[in-house]
Length: 256
Image (cartoon, rainbow, N blue to C red; front, side):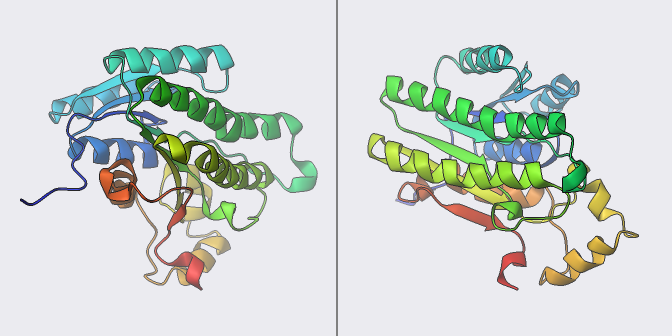
């Protein structure tokens, strides 16, 4: 008998930030593998995205929530679990924000905004998902989204770099505590991706564009499509003995 290790038929997943960008790509990848997905996003495009995905024949739900607000986050998570029939197998913490300023001029309110969404909300969602998995006695998969800036400091993005460094360490810390409970906590670290968040860098008049492109061995930036396979792998039984890993999806950027 041939087994498909990445078949997610019957699995229930929450993907935050799934209305657009990399998170939409990952949500779509999970559904293509058979999972039922609920997207949590503050984006007004959430319902439109859900309808587009349903039109493709996928089982998809949407919840509007502000992950920067503790009450909205908790209500959003609970509502998502309810839409999935009261059960959860997979959490993808894909929502993220970015602010760019020279560090000496970085507004503290922007620092708090980035850390709150990119790190504090990730911890809270991991905690809630972990409790859900333990109550179900089912185990589960948590996929955090780290970054190249989990490894590097970056330029003019100190809050983002700090938040993504924190996500990498949080992933390892939760692995230490929850692996024995059948919960895998891993992270994907996207390289330089051609998305709305990176429009400042994908401007070809920006010297950083050529610098980054030249360092990528294939000289091609990534897309949301490139996140599908790695996300499905971490969500499936194919990765059951992989835990606490930070996996670059960077086209080889880190090896140079």
